[in-house]
Amino acid sequence: MYVCLCKGVTDKAIASAVAAGACSFNAVQEALGVSTQCGSCEALARAIVAELAPLPSSQFYELATPPAALAYA
Ligand code: FES
Image (cartoon, rainbow, N blue to C red; front, top):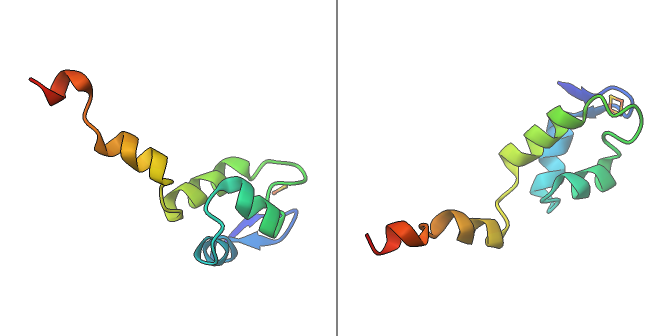
């Protein structure tokens, strides 16, 4: 499926970029040029990257750590 018509970027191209190491929207944008013209594809492109890219370790820590109020309850 085409995600970005301006640059001809597909969801498969985004998946390939993520698999090759592009782990953020900005990295995918730099690699493929997605969402660099009219910008109407940005929300969809960001959603696809968020679905496919692994969480940065700092975000994983935030999600894995219970709030202090729950830790000692
Ligand atoms: Fe992607 Fe226009 S559709 S920049």
